[in-house]
Image 1 (cartoon, rainbow, N blue to C red):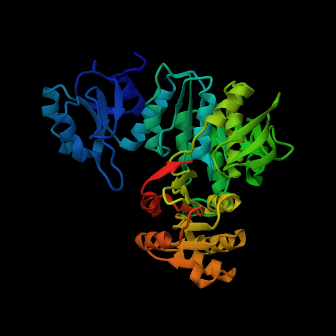
Image 2 (cartoon, rainbow, N blue to C red):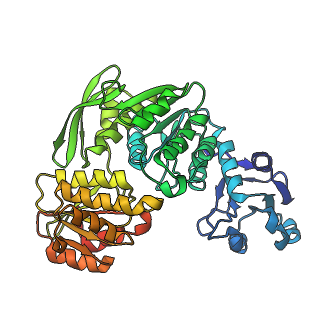
Image 3 (tube, rainbow, N blue to C red):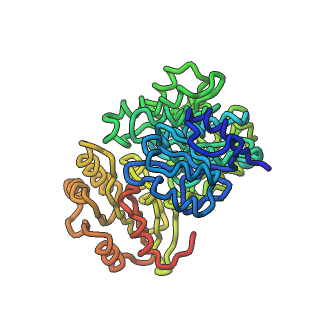
Length: 471
């Protein structure tokens, strides 16, 4: 089999846990934290978080036939340990089940000697990770992060999917507080690292953009000594990181000093075309996804492709085959004839501005409309940053604004100060906005829907779509 079993000794060594019940010779094929979706051969880890406690579901997993679990040592006294011992159910107690999950993931990663890449950044990390997987997948059997599993729980779940059949892995690392990238990096032990850019995201948990830079730079601490860091050559803070490290650095960007460059960039249909300059060759690439900022993501993915040994043709094939992650600049045409850009996966000031620029750059569409929800985790700068988005939208040529959320008034204020008439600024709940949009949009118009994950803007997309055909 391609999977590698977990023995009791493996688990105890990885976690420093204590065997409370069960036989020392037991083993498990996988690790799970979901009592609703777990195989009988898996080990159940009872995660105790702020909102949910997996210990509540222990009776359910035992009823389902699970024969082993990891629990919080402080809660062991509440469990029927003697009964489990008689039933040959394995129970291991640890000080912190979330930390134990990560420690096991780090242990599992060390079982494999193929290259692992870790990707982080303020914007574009999900798209870049998917693009890099599409590129490297032309040559290797790649494990890549699924969905948004990029935090202290998601990264371990991704690493647990590593099997002997894989030849490389590309792992996305998210962050909203200092120390998180360091912890995730220790789990991955990457050969290669990539920072897409540094921008004003997660300011609430970090403070300033310089603090964001410091937090992202934690990635370098765990890159292997002979490893390589890929950095954005057009980003001043990434350049600062590159100047301070002794690791090998590859830069991507449009600047002349970048190792992986894009020249002769132009809009082609809803996508972009450019000449990709690699260290040893140049090749023409056409992206089928909207947004000039996608070129930067493609350059980052191309740099990763080079590190994985991909040829220029393989890099080109991967980039041109790429399709957007759900909720990331998905371009659709509705049955009513207007166009819809679904960019509801997440938002911060830089990604919001880039999405607006993409909207207004679409030449064949008529009226350009922005539906904006809140950008979260911006701390004390939230109001001013939302106001700035209102100003940017008007300066860019957006015809109308449809706003919802706690900061709708701030976006509206910025738009009004930039000269947009009140009649073109509509505020309300999601249902109100959908009704107003349906009364305004005509065939050929284009509407961009965007907001942070917690804003739930995909609800508006679903109602506007009704029935759509992808373009």
